[in-house]
Amino acid sequence: MSVMSSEPATSRSGAVEEGDRRALQLLVVDDDAAQRTLIALAAKQAGHAVTVVATCNDAIREVRDKRFDCVTLDLMLEDGDGTEVLKAIADSRFAGSVIVISGMDAARRIAARLYARSLGIDLQSLPKPVDLAALRIYLANLGKTALGLPVVHTWGGVAAEGVAAKHRS
Image (cartoon, rainbow, N blue to C red):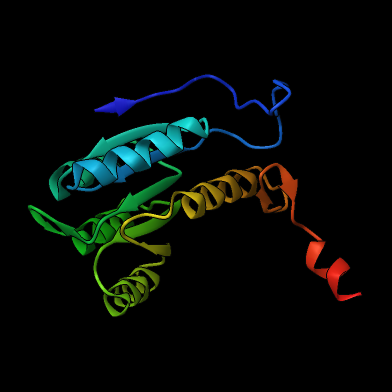
């Protein structure tokens, strides 16, 4: 199932933020329908193009056939282990980022991160249930770095860059 959005992101005033970020091509891999839907909706609302799959086999097919900027990946899928998908991602010479979103304990997510690094994959991890605010910030930062722009964390429309330095002085 693909959820596509071609509308540009807008600010509160309705102005298009052209040049500030770009829509990412995102693959969501999760066998939990509720988590898959939450992740896809959060990404779509942020203006990204989303493809969702529920199995290792479907994920492997997608990464071989299409180009994605980012993959969100559950580690435990009904038909296999998410590390199989990591191997396929590495074999496809994927140049994007991977976010493991898993209910597995922190040790398992750390092991997946180490395995991904051994394959040359940039991997972050978030526990389930997914923190949608953290996911949105990560995707926003990824969209900026894809354009070569500096990362500026925002919360509620307020730029947080330099705030800590102001409080220290």
